[in-house]
Image (cartoon, rainbow, N blue to C red; front, side, top):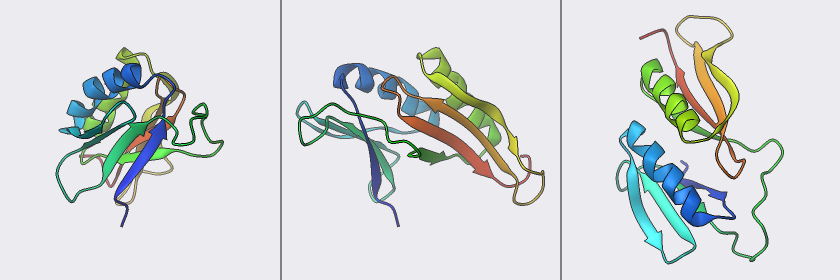
Length: 130
């Protein structure tokens, strides 16, 4: 249902460096780049993507209060790896990896962080421990 999500950046080259290093943790990489204002990452054509861009209106990028991009992972180990890589790249901790709620078939395992521009992201997996 969702094609791609974008987050804004005030320093696109710095953001590209962050995501160029982070996305391979998920098996993702750059898929599209439009000049100096838009870069999309993903795992393949026709699959949901993640993009970073300068705001179209030319104003400063600002983080929305309550906005967050959640990135699905197929194992808890990938949640841990993505979070650890983000921290190594200078992200800000918003909640270390762990189960939110109860263990079981619908357990929510997530980790939260903010990128270099302050955009909030969550790496998560729903399901029992793998």
